[in-house]
Amino acid sequence: MKRRTFISNMLLAGAAVTAYPYLASAASNDLKDFDKWQLSDAEWRKRLNNVQYGVLRDEDTEPAYSNAMESNKRDGSYHCAGCDLEAYSSAHKFESGTGWPSFWQPINAKFVETKTDFRAIWPRTEVHCARCGGHQGHVFKDGPKPTGLRYCLNSAAIIFKAA
Image (tube, rainbow, N blue to C red; front, top):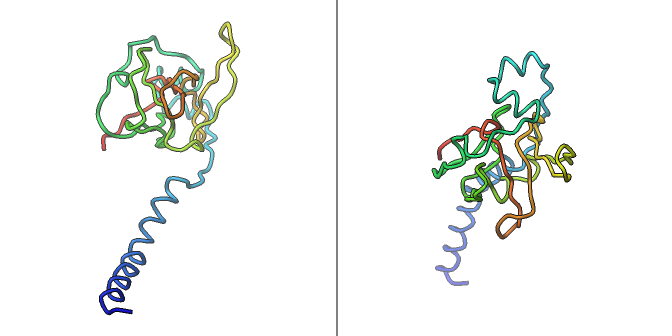
């Protein structure tokens, strides 16, 4: 083996060993397990304002085009307003023309749960925070590639944090 090849390989190995803890912790943060929140109604009322409570706990829907997050174009992430779980990224946000902030996927599928909503004329799929159970909005199969999904969220259900 040539000395140059040996030195190059040793430098690469050293870089890999040095970087591993950082890469492993970043990956585990993305995929970490979390405890589900179990708060009383009184605790939720103290934690949330009236609009947030209505959306997250009573599954209300904000009127279209009446919220600040729909037109937000800044880079950053969107966290659950109930428990601060980082669930959506501005990299996945798109203009849907519906009047609500829309994303084609969550940061991690583990961070959201779904259930069927029968309150409309036809069944829809509700989206809830996997940690606190807060209602965030609905998911529809009319989004852009690559997923074809549109996570249509209530502004009151999310908090934007700039990158």
